[in-house]
Each structure stands twice: as structure tokens, then as C-alpha cells.
Image 1 (tube, rainbow, N blue to C red):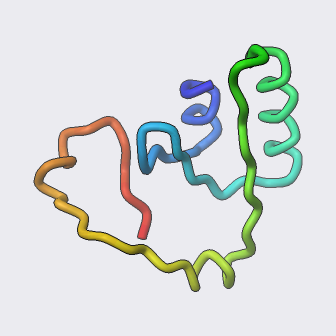
Image 2 (spheres, rainbow, N blue to C red):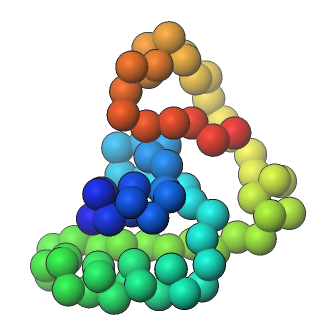
Length: 77
């Protein structure tokens, strides 16, 4: 699922957390693909958020950008 999400514009923000700005159609395509790929021991959560709601998010904790700068993901803040 990682490549499927990345190929559709999602950015990895943690090991198992991705953020993306996608249409409802793309979200439905991802859901269908997940149903085909995931076995009974895994799950995919999709949390829709409007731009205003996402802009009001709260991030708690310290981000050491030097420690993560060479990783294969981006931080969206």
C-alpha cells in the first residue's frame, strides 16, 4: 500500500501515517485497492478533513529535522 499511496500524491509523515490532498474519487480507488491487498490482520484508516480543519490541527512534540532529513518522507506542517 505504501507505493500505491505515494503514487497518488500522499506524503509519508510517520512510518505508517500518510497525508494527502486527494479527490473523493481517488480516495475511493485507494479504498478498493486496500480491500484487495490487505489481509485480515491489517487495516487502512481514512480520515477526511477539510482544509480549514486541517489548518487548525495541533502538533505536539519536538521535530528534530536534522535527524529525519534523509528519510523517504516529508513533514507537512
